[in-house]
Figure (cartoon, rainbow, N blue to C red):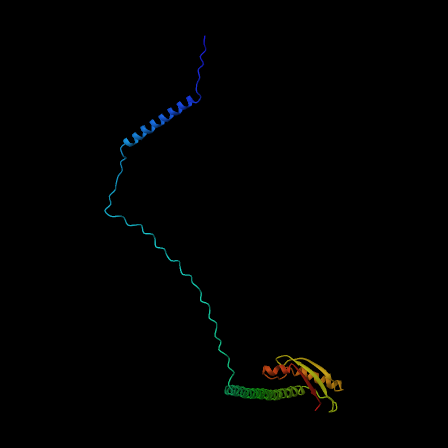
Length: 235
């Protein structure tokens, strides 16, 4: 038995596979290329316009608001101070002097008027006091006359009630007599004895028997007859 050795070339199988793959790829390219060309074109619609629509107008850009710039203040113009003229100085001094003299004159007149007013007030005060003093003196004189008149009446009434005593004419007894508003004798107190008790007692009894004593009807005078100091001497 003979043995046959089969020799296979290396790479024969790989070349066959490569050729097969290329043929298949070529077949697919032809098939799909023909099919793509055989398909009818896709439908599409066309819209007819009588006129082109207005182009969309972009909104007008508003300019930015103006920036208000505050004006810079102008420097103040200061008028130069001119020295006063000599004539102006003289006029000013003259007016000042006249004003001062007028003020002094007014002050003098005012002081004189105030002095005259004070003198007039002082004179009026003196005149008022003098008049008051005169009136008071007249009233006092009239009052004293009335008081003296009624005191004489009272003494006369009391003397008419005294019982004569044998005493020298120099004997003198003084009593303080207290009267009521109607002239009634409330009390008779011996404040100076005559030195003769009999005469003192006789005078006291006469005072009490003469009650009521005559007093003025004027109320202003009656108050002067509340207490009387009466002196009696033998006739």
